[in-house]
Image 1 (cartoon, rainbow, N blue to C red):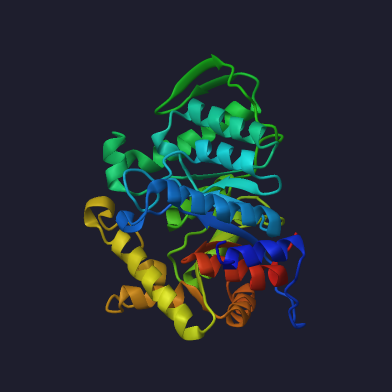
Image 2: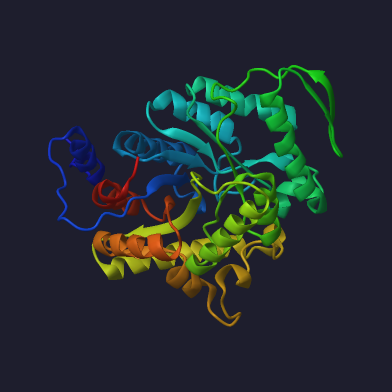
Length: 365
């Protein structure tokens, strides 16, 4: 017989065989989702194992009070092997009952917009109305070259695609005249199960992207690379711009993606945080792929001379023991307006410790 694992212990906890009973403290109420990558570092295991581990994690999420799993789309890189978040989402839908299924994000500029409308609507139907649509522009030059989409057109193509998808969902038949696409009297099927459509989020990091989203009345989701203080500044810029254009801020849930490293000791957690930061910085410093359009000094609000790995560890990654992480979440709830934590765990143990010892004390309905 195999020895019990920490995951076995967590499943016993979920079934109620024994429960973690925290000491009373002031609750930090936040929604919690997981930004799920399918990373294949150094190809150390077979790809089937990467997917199996992700599905094991998603099964735990479905049982423990997470709001949603948000699937990350990437192409032509072992950074995350998930070229179709919609296909992956339908597979996740078949394996879960409670979890909402988000795209983080559908890289809209790479799709024919009618096919994009169909695929997300189909995901919503097959998941029985559990789809969250997150849309983004992307910034990987390798992806743009391979899909033959000019980088300089990416923002305009992305915005037009979002507009077309919404029109396709909200109208029985679609007639549309745009810069890149024209359609005449097309019936786009299926329509989403959620009415008038699934809730939508737009990935927005730059000032221009945030301004456009606010002007259109779209809700934003925020990146895992900016410092805590820059996230707060961007959120406030979004709120004021939204209200200036006649849109209400009330009732919006803004997922804030944060890297997460949790361990039994502070020292172990910092090691996980530093290792994850090295991986992240190494990925985004690839000039052939990102060419300087990835995270910048502005995202950190930091001196260019500062070590980028230290920036992540000190200003981006939430790390520490479970109790320390609870303290940090309480602080970020006040300082960063954190109401929806989109976790990006930097290790499987970080995910398990968060799920077992932090989530029950912070998750809101």
